[in-house]
Image 1 (tube, helix red, strand yellow):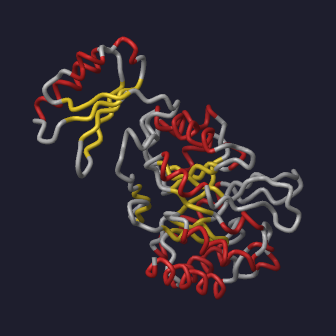
Image 2 (image 1 turned 120 degrees about the vertical axis):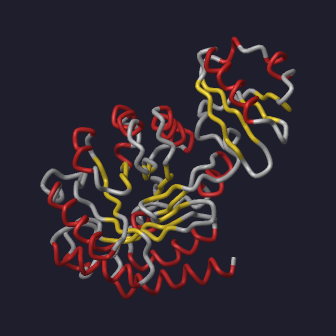
Length: 332
């Protein structure tokens, strides 16, 4: 349920309304927009007398929301959310360029890539320290040592860092990480999502390969129900029967998510196709569709990468893509 307040409502009246609603056992979220203030109510709203609420002096109208996701719903929060990721902002017109290797492999590798992507305009550095792999015999990441190397790269370049978490028990290791990524395999790891809801760190929430947008929104709701509203939707692809690309970039998800939710949306053109030569056109397509940012894999020597080499760009190729995206956004 949402209550739309009349313009010019006094703060004392708003505070009094909030106290009364909380006393009814509801969670209350107040969103102050450019043109109106919305009071969102989460919980058992059936006991609220809509006529009574509508009749209050400061209330313009009251509406019930049938969607199961409440906090992530744009009806609750009409204006775009802007997430601050260690100084790099995402959403509300702020475009994020997140770049770096699939896996942190060595000090030399991550520092070389970090310097290169920053010079090309990247706003954040990504790198996998914990790597979920289909085969138990594949490289699993440097784990805690990988995070330390990312932090070293951050100290040198100033770029906020993004890395994936696999287990809630690892949270102490992520204390200095700017953005925690939840991978596709963990999108519905609800115990992990609950723990992340208790933090206030930005969460990059990746859509699972076979998950619907509604399921993605409900996963965000798990985190937001815990009080953490710093969420960025992240998607790479959706599973199809296509055999020529790794998967299919669901560009339509970008405007649809913007219509349904106020949270920013970042696309991953690298994992979407699995082919480096297709990263540039997919990055441009995502930007044209309204994405709030891109995450692109960059490796100093893709042929020798320990993970996802075929989809990784060289630093020179990344600079070309970043420049093309910037030109497109200026045109749009």
